[in-house]
Image (cartoon, rainbow, N blue to C red; front, top):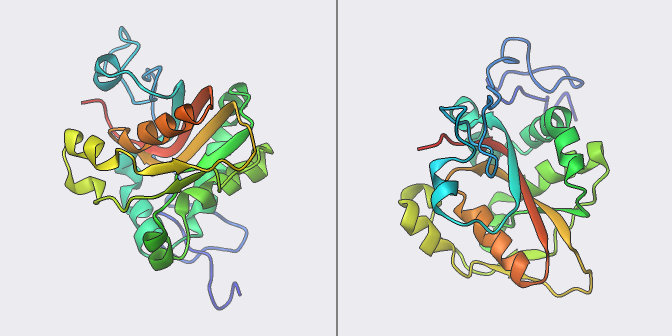
Amino acid sequence: MNFLFPRRCPICDSVIGKDRLICDECINIPRRVKEPRCMKCSKHLDSGNKMYCRDCEKHKKNFQRGLSLYEYDSVKDSINDLKNNSRPEFAEFYGDRIAHYLGEDIKEFEAEALIPIPLHPSKFKKRGYNQSELIARQISKRLDIPVYDDVLTRKIKTKDQKKLDDKGRQRNLVGAFHMAQNGVKLYNVILVDDVYTTGSTIDEAARTLREGGVEKIYFVTVAVGFDK
């Protein structure tokens, strides 16, 4: 299988060995988010005198706290390939790096489960996989936190968030998620997604979980945008 479908670098897409996750030339291209960070959403702050980014200062969030590993601009093309160009194997690199660099912080959340942000069934059928679930499963393998992929479902096929402004993104996601009443009572969970930009997707998913009785909700993403 490795001969027919060799592993590729998630940044430059060049062929690498089966035991490698990224090539030597690209290993320093993904830029980790630097301190100081927003204490709520993990965005880099321009000043060390602030605790929260502008958005988290202005708007109450439905989650306790989030962690993101990379600056979005440094991995945006790779994440686009992961999501839209049939590169599900890139999720192994990102999940592995999240567990490596953020693992101790994630463990401090003491979460019972990782919950990937779901895709609408039509998008899942077209893509063939949910990148957030693949990332979550790699984190799970490293940190031994179970993945619950059936707690949240996406019941509304929303517009592409990238084409909307901040208010449009929030309106676009209202009522988008449904929490399954499957008999599993969860109190403390971590949502997993690829990117946190305005946070509308994470916040709406967290609101749905909170209404379903989950008391503590955190999130982890591969990348985060800048404070603006």
